[in-house]
Length: 236
Ligand code: UDP
Image (cartoon, rainbow, N blue to C red; front, side, top):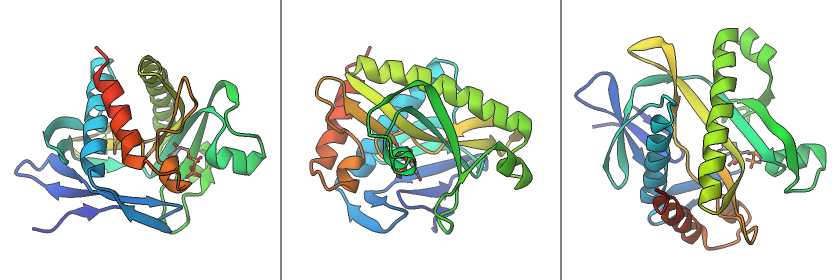
């Protein structure tokens, strides 16, 4: 059997149900638009387990997601969606490309969250776009963009609070959304939420607990992911 789709960190497989896919988390890690590559034992399991825990939590908080159920360590069933080709990034503190673009030092708290969008295109290096670009490129309607913005802000509130309880500061993160194959007028949260796509700093020490450990060769990448999982599992 061949995967329907293979990305940098996951594969998608068909199931008996035309509306449901199996999403497999790989052990591959990439950064800088695929230029830096490595493999980490247990990465697939850790990201799958963390993402499953977070999507379950978001569902319980009333946020619709593609999540159906976890199958095993590295596989989860998800609703089939057509991905909106826009990455939604929320920033609570300055970091990463925000600092590169503006010269601001890392770790400054914003008065309100910043939302930004980038085109989901490896070929173009995920360029920054705005609502007008998205509308004119036909990637999403004005109403869909409003929904994405409202949902992303809601997810940010829920997750900032959840991570804070786990002793972690949610610096920034990336979300992807999809239109349900069974009903394209319904948009749900898709992809994954894990330390691959979030910046998480230890509240007490400021230590980085996310993919920046890989990007910056800080070592202890999987140890940090394991600690994030442990702390989330300790939450009631
Ligand atoms: N991010 C991601 N995938 C991308 C780009 C960004 O998951 O293709 C996440 C990244 O891990 C960080 C946040 O979105 O938590 C903001 O990333 P930034 O724009 O600073 O980009 P970076 O330079 O870190 O790739």
